[in-house]
Image (cartoon, rainbow, N blue to C red):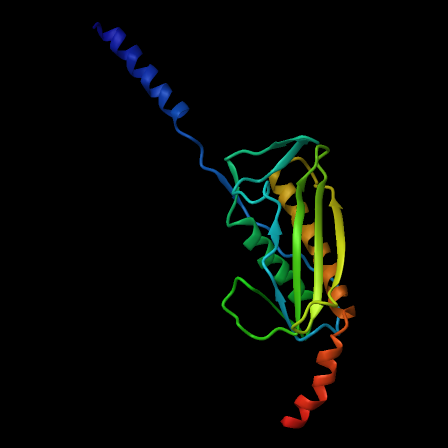
Length: 208
C-alpha cells in the first residue's frame, strides 16, 4: 500500500469515529413555581404517587405528532422516573402554598398519620401537535381514614411554551404543575372531614 493510500485510509477512519459515537443525552427536571398562599388546609397531607398513563411512564420526554402518533427521542430524558418527579415537585409546590401544613409523598420515608390524602391519575402531561402543554388529571382529596366522602374532580390545564425548545417545554410543564397545585390547595381547604372523625374529635381531646 502506498503512503498516499495509507494517509487516505487514516483520514477516513478518523472521520468515521464521530459518526459512530452517540451524543450524550440531555437530562431535564421539573421545577417548583411560586403561587398564592392559602391558609386553612389540614396540618398533615399525604400525596400518593400519581398513576401515569402508560405512554408517559418512560425515561424519554414525550410529544404528540398528531392525534394518533407520538414523538420521542432518546437524547432528551427525565432525570428520574416521571411519577416520582411529578410527586416530588407537586409536594414542593403545595408546601409553598399551604403555610401551616406539611405535605409529604408516599414514596418518602415519612410515616406520619395524615389528616388528608391526595390521589390522582395523570391521563395527559405532554405537548399536543400545536406545541401546547396539556395536563389532564383525575384527582381525589379526602380527609380522615375512610374515603367515602372524597372530593373528586377532573382538572385540565394548558400552558403555551415560550418556544419549541425542550427547555421551554419543560418550563411550561412546570407552570402547569404549579397550577395543579393551586387547584389542589383550594380542594384541601374546602374538603370536609368525615362525620365519624368529627364525632371522635372531642373524645380524643378528653383522653389527653
